[in-house]
Every structure is written in C-alpha cells, then in structure tokens.
Image 1 (cartoon, rainbow, N blue to C red):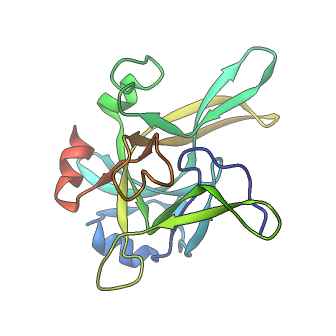
Image 2 (image 1 turned 30 degrees about the horizontal axis):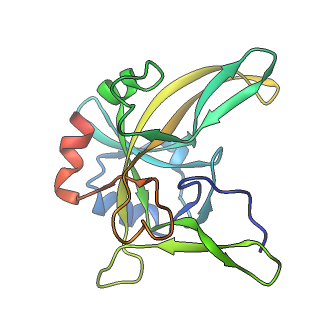
Length: 197
C-alpha cells in the first residue's frame, strides 16, 4: 500500500472504542465531537483524532485536529505535528501550550519507516511499534499539547482545537529504526502529572 511520506511519528492508530477509552483513562465526560469513535487504524497529520484534556478539573475526551497550524505569508499554512521536548519550554510557538494546555493522546501503536527495507514496489517498509501486554496492542497514551486556532485553513475561515505530539530521544527499541526522535509515551501513573503540569 502506498503511504504518504512519513517524518518522525506521522502515523499512529487507536483500535479501542470510546467506552474502553473512557474506562482506561478515567474520562469524566465525552464531548459530542467524539461521537461513537470507531477504531482508527491509520491516523495521519491533519486528521481528527481523540484527545484527553483537563476541563474544569475533569478529564474530557474530544476530537481535535492533529497539527499546530503555522500561518505563512503568501503560502498555505504549515501544519506542525510534533513538538520536540527540548524546545517546548523555549519556543514561543510551543511554550504557552506546554505550560497551560497539556493532553493525553490515546494510541494502540505508532509507525516509522524502516531506514533500509523496501517492499516489492520500492517503497520504504513501515514498522509498527506497540506496547506489550495481555492483549494485542494494548492502549497507552502519548504526551501531547493543544490549543485553539483561528484563521484561514484550506480556503475557509475556521476555529478548531489542534494538538501536537511530544517527541524525545528514542529508546533502544525504536532507535535502530528511527535514530533521532520518538513520541513520548507516558506511564499510566504519570497521566495526572502530565495533564496538570
């Protein structure tokens, strides 16, 4: 299957339904935008996907647009999907969201291109990473940040919530495939600490 070019973690999945996400992440309320939330087997940048944030002291599940939008003069806006952990506190583009608007990004797996292997059509092979557990691809959460964006996007004036995935130095499992960065995967015990800063 031909796939769009992938940079660092520009493809992930969530195969768990909304009720399972609600239980697993102790969701207090589900925004109407989440609907029934069917499994999403391929989430790419600029797609809408489920995100968990704190709203009035409660955990809320809602759908957001993947990628912070950076307006550019005389060009289409640039979508920035990932946030480097070493830039989150210093870059004006990320800092206020890192300090004030953190989120959990539910996932079941994420993908990177293999640096050498190619399929029969000459495309780079996609390597999927998942957590070990009692079930295939048990759900987990990436660390994320979010904000509300207003402006012209794809030819129309829009206001939408957008999110970005935190990235860090790769661990020993990911490093042979993608040696520069990987998504920040949170331990369940750290969900509250991440969400509340």
